[in-house]
Image 1 (cartoon, rainbow, N blue to C red):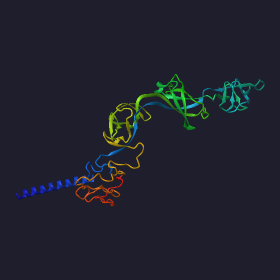
Image 2: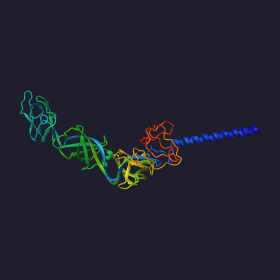
Image 3: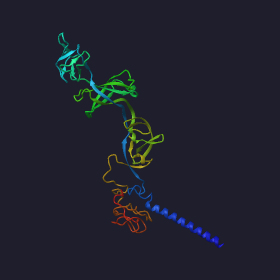
Image 4: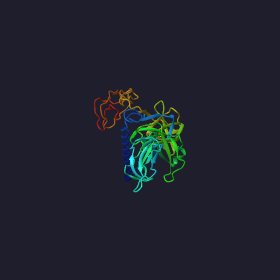
Length: 389
């Protein structure tokens, strides 16, 4: 009987010790959160029991046009250029032009003497077949040439064009009149506008590309034949729908959502249907309306009804809280604090406490908030001036 009673008492003591340990652990966790109703100091000292405020950036949903395009390489060349050959072989005895010389159709470029040992012939003149400029150095006096030898090349450098090859998957959109932007290695920050003049009727089976010829909208002396070009060819326009940054969309499995901002600085989570996307912008077919303010940065931490602060135009120098204080702390407390409050400030909170309203009549801080005291780890520390940020 005594042994049974002793065992019962030991079990009772162990249960009481376990309950006490659980109680103190829970109380310790509660103190770390602070003694304010609503969860202490969520997100720093800036909101007493009002929930966390998230900083985000926003943009307006507007109806706009998306211009789809393809990037490719090209080469600048003359609209018209020809190689010049002699009509008969022989030795070049006279050259009348030099590299860059301007010539007109019919002008004599050089003369060839077709004579050989034991036979003499009159000099044969080589004339320009078109008007233009000498694009390659002509043959030198004394060179032996044949009827297949290129004497020089003449091109019309006043009228230049750019040829480019377009991948097969884009050929359905190719047609004369498409707009393009051309940049050159020599002038990487300058955009030269052009448009499609001609489209090849056949596809190159070796490269799976189709050639297009672009004509520059304006003549520009900076553009030279033979230059390497980067071509941005606009292939199709998508219009009539709302457009927002593609990064605004939050994806959950196969569903897509966008957060819109309400007048009370809370957000609403909207399921949306997307359309075409081009260069980081996407069409929104359903789910929001024109003029809605859409969260474009910081949306991953949001939820339906979350409170936000829009920092699109920067953060104000002085932020005022719900109670009218500055620097993220409410300044004077709104009347007496909850009765029986005895919670501790977070460990290691820096700075001095503001001149808040404490009391020693059982309300607010016991004995009031001490002024000018630094924080001590684990003790009743003074509140930070800057909200602990």
